[in-house]
Image (cartoon, rainbow, N blue to C red):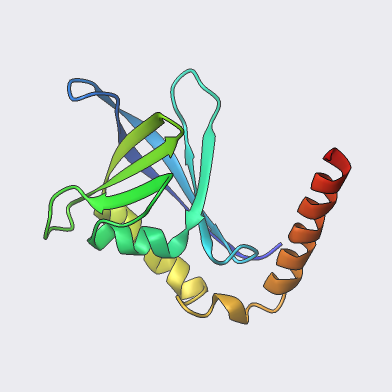
Length: 145
């Protein structure tokens, strides 16, 4: 297994305009999957939920609105780096989280020290792991169909 960077950040889970509560969120980056970050949300009374998405999406989303589909990230206020909104969606269900930008930036800085942005493909074993994962997915699909 490769090297990794981890951090825990407290985020606000925005249930509605009137209701929000703070939850711990684990951020994880691993060299064995150098293009992705993983956020594990520890919601009270539920099993932890992990979302994986592009590290570059998180980097871009801290400074400007970005993302299509299931993950959208944007500064809470235009032209400031104070807080970041992370919207996760599955079908019609969605969850909105608010985080201070500073711990996200610090985490991303640590990931960049481990694997500089744009250098992900230089990791020798990444292509082998990708090939292996794709073969496994194809084999599972063929055996299920």
